[in-house]
Image (cartoon, rainbow, N blue to C red; front, side, top):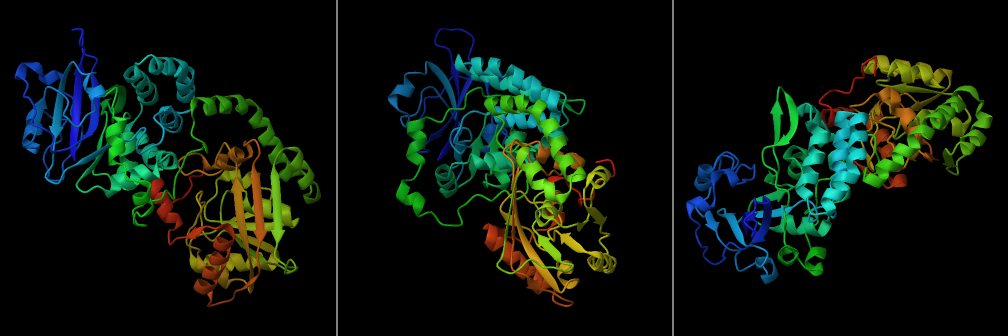
Length: 539
């Protein structure tokens, strides 16, 4: 396969439209007709910002680097015979650069090919909100009708430029990189086409992906989760350590002809027979407040809901702070907070009990106390001062010193029931992190608790944001839901930590249908924030 980048000029002799095409073409295409050097001025060439594995310079640097990196580089005057006739008729004067590697590179378009949808507004909205703040996101939403109109009348390149400018101007590169690592992969992954990915990963040679979006936005996901060797996309310009909102090279239209790309997709039989290891790397850790992709409609719905969500969230918090447990169910139901608990056939424990649950939000111990109608204490590795002050139950910080933490937990158990989250941090996806074995050594009996929590609009956890607002954001959802399943008791005791922790984790994973992993709290914070997870006092 070959990588083909094209430029089209207007047949009316007007200024070039600067339309670029990236197409799948066969390396065995018929010999091309060479253009005179004057027909393809250096200033009009667009080159994808990729590095070849052999260490040759980036194609973005200059045309001589392009010649040096691929001996088969040839300017073309007409589309190769592999293109359908109806596409050939749309080119009046076209300069096509063909780069063919030794093994044959494969290039696929991200929008509309690897991703099922071509619309990219939601990804720019995530950048604007998570890296730029709510005011930048509001400006992008207000501008969305203009962006849609530009796209509708065939000025997709202008629409992309507007979104890039609004979402990145004045932003530090580190902020965009953080969002590209922590927030965007989850939303990319949810829109990934399995059939296209199987076809993409099944081709030999180096694999490249072309995208409308700035390279920094998509590169981490494509390399880390899809195994791409290079990413072709616009390069953001930086001045004074911040983005200018402009790009060095922006292809307004990256077109993979449907009839050509479809020929590369395997049949349904081949897809069903694909090796099981040919799957994208799952997204286990991610950040950001929004659950659903912030499309124009979803963003507008969030904007309308925000004025009502704040007083509702405050009222839901006051229920736990002011009302007795006996009134919690009625008050929560009236305010749209859905709570449900189921118990194993074994009678609920009577004496001081240790409850071990998987961790979804900071409200896990509070909801457990509400459903049990019992006063509980909770231990945590790090908690903001604000969250600790607003908690309706007693919370105690652990020191990360094993002997000291063991004594703290035993002391709390002697005084009443205790809730622990052995994972040490929240995980949004259907995975269980490694359970710390300390909890299994401080109690004779342990009750595993399978926790499922969700809201359709906001996540109740964060890494890069303000953790003091985690519970508030969860309660801002229109209909937040908690479902707890109290499982059969497991015998604990000194010296049985690892084994008991594994049994507790296995019981919870089986109940929820989650996959167990060996990942820890430290892994999560290193991936998302590059830290060890300690919370600053003010956050």
